[in-house]
Length: 109
Image 1 (tube, rainbow, N blue to C red):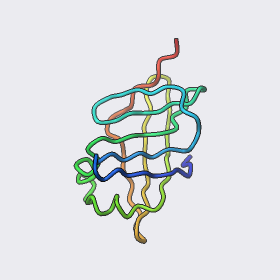
Image 2: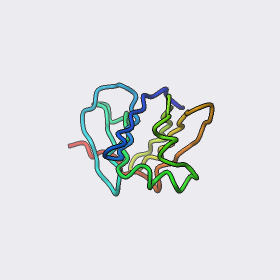
Image 3: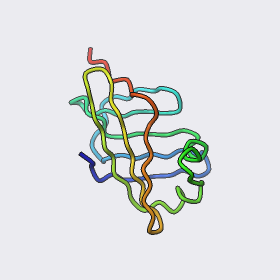
Image 4: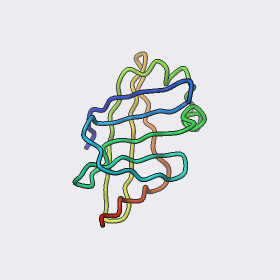
């Protein structure tokens, strides 16, 4: 189920951050992504490094991120992996961005 999310784009550092606003307890880095988890182990945020390069795969430009107004975050979490879909709304357009390959889950110690 998609949750309404906040979207922040740092154009100088080319970093896109989409988050639900919930408290972050832990994070996992992989490839160009940082995945934020709540205390309950639920994904509550995604940070994408070199975001403009990444979104080119979806036919989007850096200008789309600069004009982004809102977003939603949809996560399907399994035992060991999660699939993440980000929907970005900008200037009357909507575009889905999928984080590639399954995301590793946070390991609870």
